[in-house]
Length: 516
Ligand code: KIV
Ligand code: ZN
Image (cartoon, rainbow, N blue to C red; front, side, top):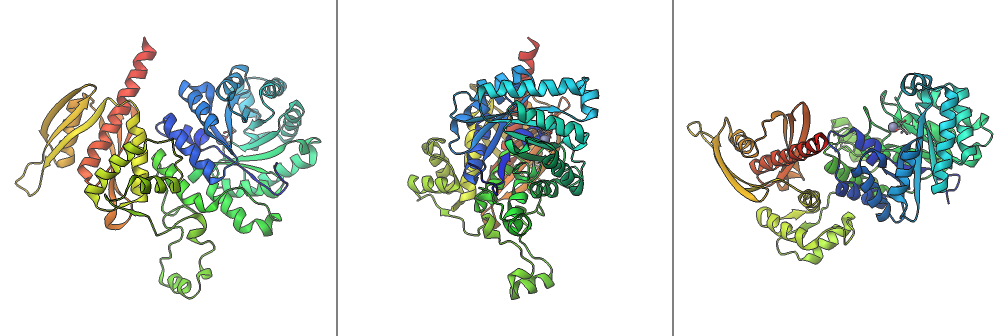
C-alpha cells in the first residue's frame, strides 16, 4: 500500500525506451532487463505494447509471469482489441496493470485522431471501463497533456477516474513545457478535479528541451506520486526522464523540498542497472551523464582535486558508492569452480534457473584460459552473449586467421563460417586486417552491406579490458547493429559483423513471410 510520501517508480525502459532503439530487443533480453529492474526495486515495469507484435505479446507475458514483487504493465490504445491483448498477455499473472491512453491536445485530437473532444472522452471512458473488467489496476494517460487546454484536461482526468482509473498519468509527450508551466498544470488538476484523491497522479516527461527531470520533480512537488522514467534516460527522441536522476534527486533533496518523500529503489544497484541496460540495448552511456556517466564522480581540474582531497564535500554532493560504483571487482581464474561463478552471478542479480550454468561455465573457462583473470563485468558480457547464442543464428564464426604487419605484407584473412548446417571457408585480402575479414564474411553470407560506423572500445578497465566492437551497417536503407567482444579485436570485429548479418538475415525472413 502506498503512503502519501512514497513516489512510485514506473519504469518504461522496455516500452518507451525500447521503441526508440535502432533494433528491437529479443524476449530474453527484455526478461533480463525486467528481472534486473525488479532487483533495483522498481514498483511497476511497463513491459511492452502487446497488440503491436507477437514478440511484444510474448515478452509481456513472460515478464508478467516472472516478476514477483514488481507489477507488470502492458500498454494499449483506448480501443477494445488493444485492451483485450493486454489481458491475454498478462491474465495468468497474479497481479498486472493495464495502461490505456488517448491523445487529448487539440492538435492530436483534430489532426491525428480526426475526432471531436467529446468522442475522445467517450473512448477513454469506455477503455477504462473495459480494462477494469480485467483488473483493478488501471492506468489512463492523456497523451500530449502538456499541450492540452486545461479545461479539457481537468474534464478528462475527472472522467477517467469516475470510470475506474486508479492511476492517471499526465504526459508531456513532446517535452515542451517549462518546469513552472508543468507545475501549474499539476497544481490546477489537484485544485479543480473533484475526485482527484481517488487516483494516483503520475507524470511522464520527455526530454526534448532537457526539462524531463526538472518537470517530473516539479510534478511531485505539486502532488504527483508516480514518476514514469527510463534507465539512462532512454526513450523517444531526446528520451524520457532518467530513472537514476529523479531517484537520486529525491533521495538527496527530498527531505527539504518535499517533506520526506521516498522511493523503493535500492540506490546502490543503480550503476549496475545502468550498465546492464546500456550493454543489452547497445546504447552507450555518455561519460558526462548525471549519476551514471563514467565522469559523474571524477574530479579533473587541479582546484577541484585539491578541494576534494581536503574535504570531499567541496565538490561531491553524492558518493560513487551511493549508486553502487565500486572499484573492487571479483577476480576469477580458470581455477575457479562452478560455485564461485554461480555466486558471482547471484550477486550480479541473475536468478538461478534463468541461465544454463554449465554452458556459462564452459565459456568462462575458455575466456579465463585466454585472459588469465576474469572480472565480474566479463561474466556479465558472457551472459549477454549467451542469450544471443540461444537465439536462432544462421551464421556463426568457426575459425579465423589473419596475416598483417609491415608495409610489404598484404593484409590477408581466411574465415570459416557455419552457415545453417554447413561450413564454408573464404580467403581474401583487404586494405587492413579487418577489411580483409569483412570482405570474406560479405562473400560467405552473400550480404552486400555498407559499413556506416565501426567503433572499438574497451570493455572493462585498464589492461584487463576486452575489446568491444560495435558495427552499424546499412542494408537496403535500414541500419543494423552488431556487437562483438573478445580479447582479440579482429575476432571481436568478425563477431560484430556476423551478429549484424544474422539480424539482416532474420529481417529478410520476416519480409519474405510478409510477402507470401
Ligand atoms: O509520451 C507519451 O505520451 C506516452 C504515452 C503512451 C504515455 O508515452
Ligand atoms: Zn512517452
